[in-house]
Amino acid sequence: LWGEIRRVTDYGAYIELGAVVRGFMHFMDHPLFGEVKGAHPKEFMRVGDRVRVWVLDVDVTQKRIKLTANRPSGLPGPRREVKWI
Image (cartoon, rainbow, N blue to C red; front, side, top):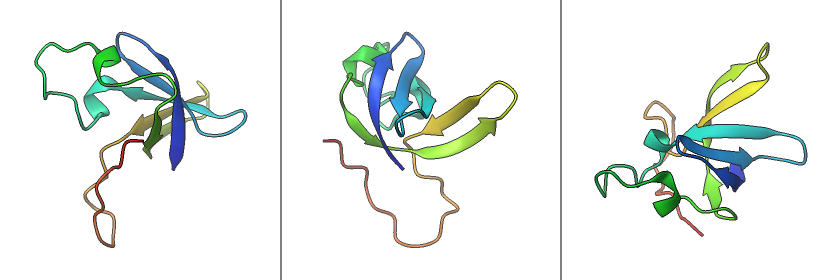
């Protein structure tokens, strides 16, 4: 899925996946996490950035979608790098 970062918090980013669907990506699930020790999520995630994400979990009762920008290893097909626009 492709989405757009709408809000960055101390813990990660809220990503809009469609007109009424938003998910949350924890900063540790971002490929750039760990490149700069102690970096705040706002240093590598910005509002308006378009990101490719995968759904990790859907909690229907809480109406929450957990996302990751790290491609799950078990997916078939060639692995393509995430292109940050």
